[in-house]
Amino acid sequence: MDNPDNYIVNIFKNEIQIKRIRKELKQLEILDRKEFKITFKQLSNNLQIIVEMQPVVPLNQGKPIKFCLYLDNKFPFVFPRVHVLSHLTKPTFADGRDYIEDVLHQQWSPSILLNEIIQKFPQFLDQVRRCKDDRDQLLSLGKYNQDLEYEGQLGLEDVEYFCCKEIIDGKSYQKILQLSNSHILILESQNKVLNLQGYQPTKDLVKVEKIDNSAILTWRSDDNFRQQVLIPQNIDQFMDSILLYKTGSSGKKIQEEEVTLQKFENFEIQKLLDSVTYYEKSLEQELNSQTLNSLMDSYQQAIEYFSAVSDEDFKEYVMRLQTLLGREDVQKILSNKL
Figure 1 (spheres, rainbow, N blue to C red):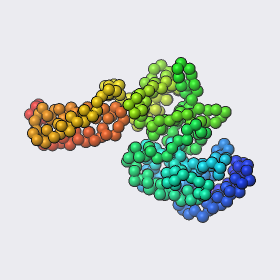
Figure 2: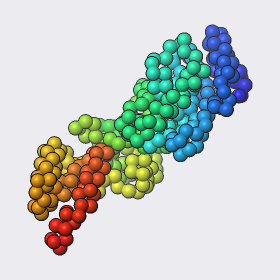
Figure 3: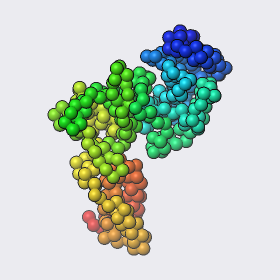
Figure 4: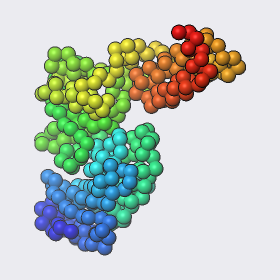
């Protein structure tokens, strides 16, 4: 373990703070060094305690996992933050969210020591492992502390930053975007300090258009849509990156033209799902060409709709369609049509 005393006296000026932190960091020595490798780093006027743990299959592609305990220079008068530096899953955990309450399963209080927080990391990883395939659950963990100072030098594995101008009501505002496959953050630099102004899950980004040197982002929020106009310093690199984080394939359109969200803006999905149920039941009673075609068309519409709104339910209807087409009696009817 590093000797962090130089960091302590550089960062913390209050004697009460220094005494508390020295005592806390001394207690970290009781941790099993095989399980927790501890290093320290000074970030501006804050202390970063980096905790490296052994791999946990199937998280982080079997590589060692890094956490960060982030101590503001006002600690312990303000809460510490827990960040994950390794991506763990897809969508990533290494996106700047604070997981302190998920690790503790309660709000932090000054009576909770740093070594107690670190000892709960394995249980937190077990929780992540159990829900690793549940995108919504993964995105529900952690939180961003909006309108507070945001640390942009944590060493997150899965983010990228772009300087942009955001156009709002005809006026230009200098912003910094943090991109990842989980969230997109809007940051603003004030007196060399980053402040988090807003964020939204990347899955809510439904369309990206390049017009000259501008990027037009269309966002979905509940049943509403809004557009965001950005002028990145490097438009081509920005487009490649944001499409990569959204789709997993650089240069790929988020949606094909005929499957854009605008097509489904007033679409009554419940009526379609009711039709699916009706045709499925009808097909159970009597297999005929007309009902079969109607059901296949309904499946295809459901796939297009859920794909357009970035809803994982599209996989369910892909599976239903594949199962239907795999039936011998269905294949016989389809063959007779040829």
